[in-house]
Image (tube, rainbow, N blue to C red):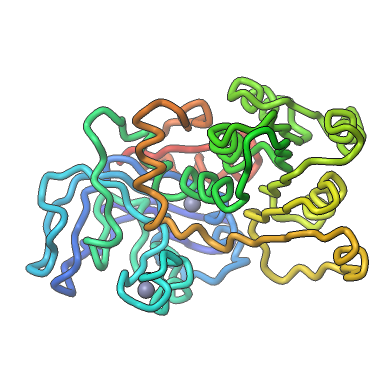
Length: 346
Ligand SMILES: [Zn+2]
Ligand SMILES: [Zn+2]
């Protein structure tokens, strides 16, 4: 079967790979109808995260269940499903408490040895372990292009807004208006804030955030701290959600939050080191929360419902629709930041 494979740092190809098989009675094989390229795939492309040449890539997919093992109860062949980007056991201490991102046996599709040596989702067929836990049926009225977001980016944004404990009338600022920031903004608006302010440098992203109902602030044109303070009686935002994952973005989040406010960090960090003057954080009574990866299994049903109701719509974020064979071009566009979301259709 055809799949996107890692060749060497900076180069992916579409090639024939061995067809995935059921190896455990709880497995399912999904015939992928749509997959996508995600920001974290770029870490593999550039070998910032290790992948062996020839290993397959991708962790976002929607498709039809092709075959299931004898132990699978909740999905059956022919059913349309979305795949969880993070493959959990569903039964450990953390999974039982809704924190599946901390699962004792957490694995990730298309992440090589580091992700548990599962095949990637940018392929015609993909094996999903613990299918009862890691596949969610897609309602008939939600198309593939919307549903695919529920397996990762949309649920991540939805979860960040949820753990921010936004109260009606509060002001929410979002640092970063990329796909996650945009979906955070849409989800935050469901909690009844007085307004959601989206801070970014790129006019295109800000325009999409404004379409979604946020107040855009272009940090290339004006000081975002001044802009946020002007709108909040000089105090700063009650809640700031950082959706970038850089030290500059984290610092900006601290700059625009009010005393006693909450900072939620959904941006992804690895080895960055940040100097914090704890006395300042303590005196400001800051509440800083890190989401970690999204505990998608505890979130995606609610997220899917919001998509079905049309209260969150990821579709405007799709910039490119390519065939699976054009994946290398998709990676290039995405890597050059010329694409916000690239969908690949096998
Ligand atoms: Zn992803
Ligand atoms: Zn678990």
